[in-house]
Image 1 (cartoon, rainbow, N blue to C red):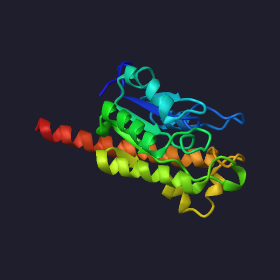
Image 2: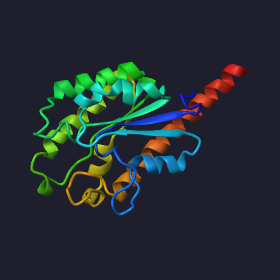
Image 3: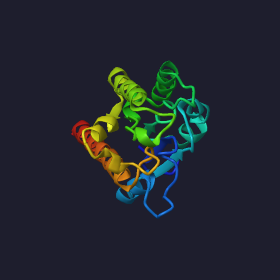
Amino acid sequence: MKGVFGLPTLVCFGDNITAGECDWDGGLRLTSRIREEMEDWIVINAGTEAGTTRDGVMRFQSDVMSYKPDLVTIFFGGNDASENAGIELSEYEKNLTYMIRNISPEKVILISPSPIDETMQNYRNNKRMEMYANKVRDLADKTGAHYIDLWSMMKERNTYHSMLKDDGYELNNKGYKLIAHEIIRKIRIQYKKKKSVLRFLSL
């Protein structure tokens, strides 16, 4: 369980919600928050601005597989579901399936896109976003990949708008705190299970 750096390696692969380490106000984004809590792991940020699963497939080998990761979060959908992107649901599924199969499902944590504030968005709507979120859930069920249902976690909170920036789409500090916590919790649970199996096999 060691990547190219000699330590367990997590690659966070996604779009602009994954990209970047800090916001303009100094608030920590996704990988910075994970890194703070997982000091014995190498955490790679492989997010890009305006990224979609289509360009994700194109940069998959260089941005993900080259690190020989132990785990990969796959967090796309907000841009794929945008009316501007032209990524239909069938292509979204095909692209995510390619990523999962090449990494292997047990090393993948799929994350569904989050709901948006429709009053602040011209080219995204929650009806379409939910379709893409549901597809992530379906792929997790189909492939056995690990899964974080960010869509439902936020929708269950009537105040989910408070987790979004003023653009009604990107996550703010509250939103990043939520998803980082869930990723860390998921990793710790899975690696606790793996260590238990290894101890059993060594007896």
